[in-house]
Amino acid sequence: HGERIIVPFYDKLAQADPEALPTQDLTAFDAVLVDVRWPGAAALALMAARAIGRPAILDADTAPRNVLERLFRLASHIVASEPAAFILCGEEQGPQEACEALARRTDAFVAVTGGAAGSWWFDRSVASVRHVAAPSIKAVDTLAAGDVFHGAFAVGLAEAM
Image (cartoon, rainbow, N blue to C red; front, side):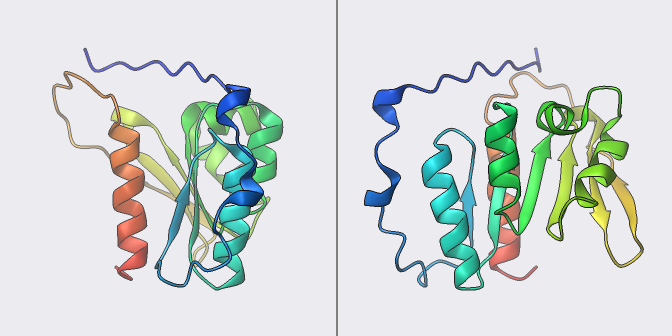
């Protein structure tokens, strides 16, 4: 109860040509949120969002390091799971140290989510990592909890909260 496992599978048949996507006009959207499952499309969407000054949010989760590195450079806001942060920074660091290490590599907003341990984000106004604890609950199923978190984060940015 309350655990999750991610088994990424990159089916070449599901990786259609991202150039066919209608990214030329994203002005109707207040923010763009992508994950790592279709890296080519995610890269195009992040670049298109940044080109028009919209938040370009990366849900960085378990993926090959080269995919994370590529998308990391394109995002204006990065919310990484602990596993993704460890892929990028090494598992010898805790989530707070990984958050700081990631933030030092980019000008983007950086956060690391740690499930029941809460979330860490780098506050550039004071040049340090901040932490918010997660509420204590009895989790029955955490499937899509990260998706809900990332969606709420994107809405918060889009609504200038």
